[in-house]
Length: 171
Image 1 (cartoon, rainbow, N blue to C red):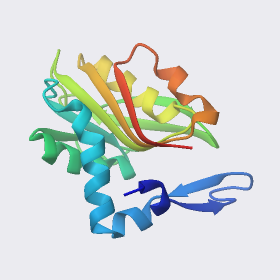
Image 2 (image 1 turned 90 degrees about the horizontal axis):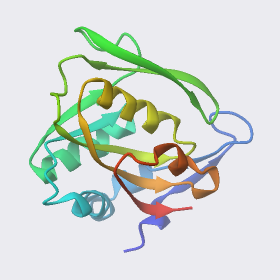
Image 3 (image 1 turned 90 degrees about the vertical axis):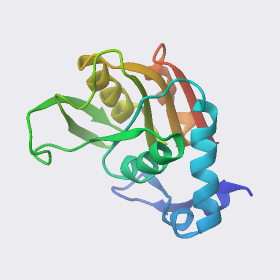
């Protein structure tokens, strides 16, 4: 099954000039969703992953499914003021603006092997910020799994040296 056929382009969203890669058609198709999760999880089976981390919001969708597939826990990275306990935060640049992410300070144990998951790698800002948070808490980045990579934006360059990077679909 070619998963890219389940990705819909939305022009000029969230702002003019951006072509948004919409994963909702993939999410509503049970076979496509199951295949996407397996293709994102399989390269990391047997690699000592202890925890999956995903950033708000679509990282939650794929991250929890991959955590279940790997029989490990899941940690959410959220936008500011969404987590109820003490947090660590980092600000970063997006393809179309600036944002901040937070994680609970006790979410990741020192030297815990972490797989970071998201639906899309564009400029690399969100994933790099997520990696920074994991490392600040002492976690070890064992890998990064992405459903869609926009190769023309070179986001992978920001992630050099941060473990194996696996993208299921590349545009």
